[in-house]
Amino acid sequence: GGECRRAHPAVPAPGQLVRPALQFVHLGHERLVIEDEVCRVVIGRPRSHPGRDAPGSERVRTQPPRGRHGCIGHPRDGSVTGVSVLFATHAAYHDHLAGPRHPERPERLDAVVRGAQRAGLAEALVPVEPVAATRADLERVHPVAYLDRIEGISAAGGGRLDPDTYASPGSWNAAVLAAGAGLTAVEALRRGEAASAFCAVRPPGHHATAHESMGFCFVNNVAVVAASLADQGERVMVFDFDAHHGNGTNDIFYADPRVLFVSIHQWPLYPGTGRDDEIGVGAGRGYTVNIPVPPGSTGDVYLYAFDEVVAPVAERFRPTWVIISAGFDAHRDDPITDL
Image 1 (tube, rainbow, N blue to C red):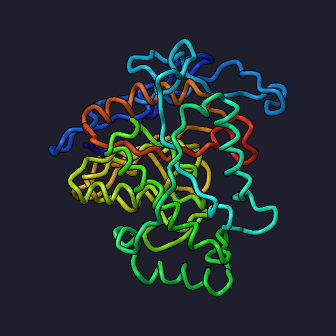
Image 2 (cartoon, rainbow, N blue to C red):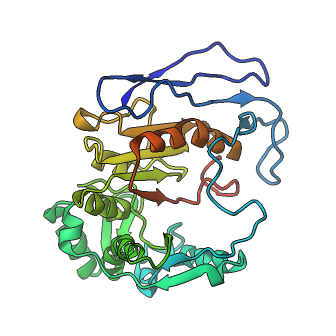
């Protein structure tokens, strides 16, 4: 746990590594990261991504990752034998309609399911039907008046919650089922039904603060699960690799040392939060780790940050549960991000 100090090196020559970009300094309470570094940029020849890179454009890269901690995903031979993953989704998620041509639409969920099938993972997935989160579950994170407003607007036929977020008649039911998916998965994992779970849900949640909807998000799904686990004495790590900063999750646990929040995200980008000096306050100081990366960053930047910051932080925090906010918009073909 410590404060974040930005180094200001001279402008690098082409191919020169810029480091340290971040230095974490111990402040006298439980140690999480001490003098770890993030490799920020190497300016060099651009990678070729058809349809994305204009002639002469630059992309931001690091040197190849050292792989000290390995990576989470497929085994080296590409096989998935012997792996089972709970797959929690629900037909009611299609009933949340944000409006015609809205980017957060039911087809996103269909694409996730098709993607799992096309990747040859169907046999490894164990279907789980989410149970709706209760009001008590939701109120660990959101105040009663906030929840009443969303439920009331949905019940009245729908309407705009904020400039970005629209509720339809089916939105409230979808939202409580989305929040309940993680809780349902946790109970199934505790029963030993699998070693991990994937929750394909909508509406999404990581932009929702305790008191405000934003960025298409109603209930902070990840925060509901993390708060439930923390109240049961668990040490929870939330790792967010969405291209956008998970400002809602960041804020909800900003003063809470029971939950370690780590985010890698594009900077600058909506919602404008997630600077590297946002590290928590009070008892939670040092338990928020934000790793902003510049537009054009490639996958090896993420892997290097994972090796040099994320894995060491996790090792020191020693979480009993890890929850991943798995935003897919860091993909090179996403139309509104630049990673």
